[in-house]
Length: 364
Image (tube, rainbow, N blue to C red; front, side):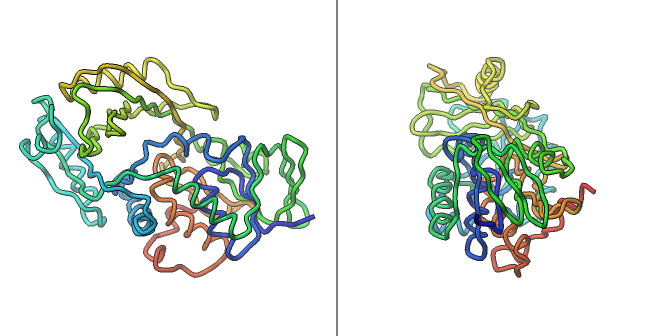
């Protein structure tokens, strides 16, 4: 029987990217419980790369990932607007203060500059911050890229392989799946997203409080239709965001409802909330709600990702808690995590990233 160097639980963008990075230097197995990789959070992303999304502590991962994403053709420039009303100027000022010096590029706009980029705007919205570098991400192509790269490097991917038992003896893991398959690995890597704390408990590690939060998105048809050049628009208070998609609009109420790990579905209240908030922003007529979906974004208590070996459970490692920015940070995050797990030196992509802030050690 093969004894893999690493067995990764989860084949979403986290497991796919990390397995590809590890496989140049180690044997890697990926166990995916669903019929196909990326069924949950990865397949339900709003699909944008935005330099400030996730806060100043995430900016280094996002900026380090940008060149890789652009060079491989996964980004299409769009731009982003954080918008506010008269009473929101303090929040816009605070945004500028928080992100000043992080390397993110942005500028303050007056009402005229805002209206030039967002037609049909209600007059209450008077102030904005413009981020010219924001881009759409081709999520499916990026995920497929990492799966293909991993396969070329020898990654063994098992689908319909839900892990049900993980026990460690003689410095290796004995792993069993729901269909009765049996595997062995030296290191078990937890890239299970919303199920991360459950995998930790199964392996005898202490859960670190990763909480799945439901996020709702609706696709609406509007009159007028959104221009293709419309930027990503975000409320400075975090109450909504929307962006154009193939002549339609993707709209979210920016909800974060705690949830058990599950196949998430949208709630009617959240859909109604999204529509109501949009009508207070633009004077466009909503002709139809064409599609609605929800996904789970999973966060640790400090809302920072968790990368590296567990300090109390030998042979167990974390690559989890990446919230809503796991896709836009995946190149740098996977490269950094692989270097940590393999004990290899940093390279140009990761050299400026402070790995300590993402370490599981902070929860001890």
